[in-house]
Structures are given as C-alpha cells and as structure tokens.
Length: 252
Image (tube, rainbow, N blue to C red; front, side, top):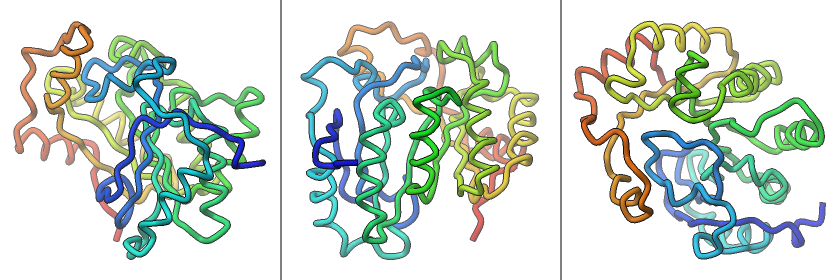
C-alpha cells in the first residue's frame, strides 16, 4: 500500500490523550459515523461529506505529526485512531497503523464496530488491520438487538460477531459500555453483557462510562432534537452497581 496516497477525513487530533489506550496517546479522530446514538457526545462527527467538519490529510502526513510526540509514549503509549467511526475509513487506518508498526509504535483502534462485515472487500482488509493493531477498544452499547436498534438505528449482530472474531484471533480488547439511566442500565442487559464478555479471550479491561450531557450544546448548534433532556448522569452508586453487574475489571 502506498501510504502517501491514502487520504483520510480527519475531524480533530488530541496530542496527549490519557484514556483511549495505555500510556500517553496521539489520538486521531476521524469524520463520519452511520449510527445515531441518542446520547452521542460528538454528533458533529456524524456527517462524512461536510467539508467544513474535517481536513483531508494523507496517512503519511498525520503519522509524521504523531512522531513529534514520540518521546512522551512511555509505558506503552502510542497512536489511537477513533471517530466518528474509524472503520468507515479502513484504508486510512490501515495505512497509518502499517507505518506505525514498521517502527514499533503501539497502535489502538477505538470503534463501535458498526461497519464490520465478513463480506468482501471489507473482511480481507480488516484481517490486514488486525495484523497491525495492538489493541481494540470496543464500545458495546446494548445486548438486546431490538433495543440496540432503537438506541443507535442499527442492529448489534455484526458488532458482537466482530468481538467474537477478534477473540478468535487472540487480539487484545478493552470493552466499554456507556451507562445511561433508564436506557442502558437494566439489570438483565448488564448481566447479558457480562456473560457475553466472559465468552471472549484477551479482554484486558471492562469499563462503565457514565453518561454525561457535555455534548448537548453541539446537538443544539446542529439543530438536532435531543431526546434525553430529562435524563441525569448516573450517580456514583449507580455506576458501582453497573460495574458489579457487568463484571468491570482492569487486568494489571
């Protein structure tokens, strides 16, 4: 692959990320996402064709910028690509991570898994991506398929299939779940999520992310109706309950 010719729609960059992967991360946020999660905190990344929302950059250009910060990538730090939904720009992610692995830089993909399919040409490229990705951070939003459709607009069957595929390939994973009171906090759903996670190999971390309202002003700016105005962030007790039900842990 000629990486200098692979272009990506880059929404923004964070040079000193501390939560999206181990150590200090250079995080590339890509533009475009098909899902319409009711609690999304960055809806400005949804549309993939609004040029004012992104900068078109080559994989090599972005990678060179990332390398300026390499001295900070101690304790397993490196490059994370997130979204939007990064898998919608699979060629770009593959190009950046291929450059990274040539010189031993740790790579992390933060994804909700929505574009995953075992159909071609996606699947062959995804297998190549697995070869150059050290860690997958997978956001599992809801186990019940019908509830998942109401929450995001899409089924979760291919997302769960992706998690199973990554497990079968021995890929390291972090699993995250956004806890929204009255929406994604049902006991049966959290237990089902725990039971599914227990079928996976190489899960190094399971996290509960509390719902927050920091993205609401962006919904208002974009004139998108926000349907969770009466929902408050979960309390510390509610988060602890969910962590227990879901089996949250961090492997040392």
